[in-house]
Image (cartoon, rainbow, N blue to C red; front, side, top):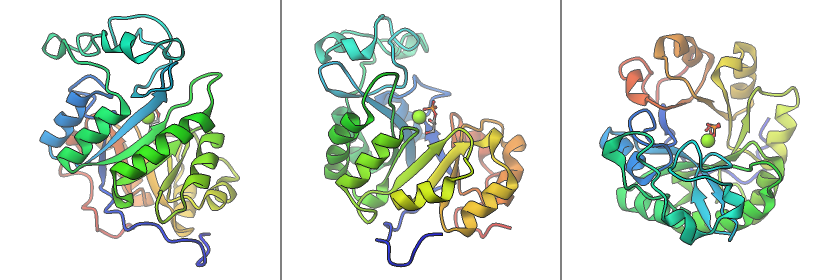
Length: 262
Ligand code: G3P
Ligand code: MG
């Protein structure tokens, strides 16, 4: 249970639908064009992944390697900004996206500010990399760019979130605890971080756990439902938001944001 003497969270207007990696069903994931596509489709919030290149530059990217989503090869941990700037990160998705460049965190924050958008930024810690170092680089930049009510920082990596919390309290930095399956000890983990939310795989959430989380005062987000009918009963369990590759599919099915849950 959230204690009343903990710093309070910003008043976030949490939407029902968040575009996962930008509008990734319709544009190359984690790119500037995918965020513009989300905005054009009417979605105010995007989820994005951030990690560090070998030279310490934070970039918006999901995988540890370039292979799946670019015309290059290699591990991000061994590359510098000059090398990744030469890559095409759109052509793999479709010819119309050829020429898209990998976005740095700085590029992406500039776009989010320009479009007046909000972000769930996931600290993506790939094997053998430091979540603490990632948080140290990313958190101050997020806080400078966006007001706290337009930001949720999440990660599967405990050291990353622990360090993030040492950099800013809950009134400045809403933290989301990311889990594949909500563990038995979810509540102590959320209390220790003064978390704003829990984000979990929608296929592994149970109604009982969802109701416990809501009763304890946390927000509950699910990734990555793309079938609104299969997801429909999760709204009745109290789920606040769905992080979807194709959130437009949920139009007319997701309840309005302010509707009380059953
Ligand atoms: O933040 C929700 C979701 O993005 C977590 O998994 O692998 O898609 O980054 P992944
Ligand atoms: Mg992610």
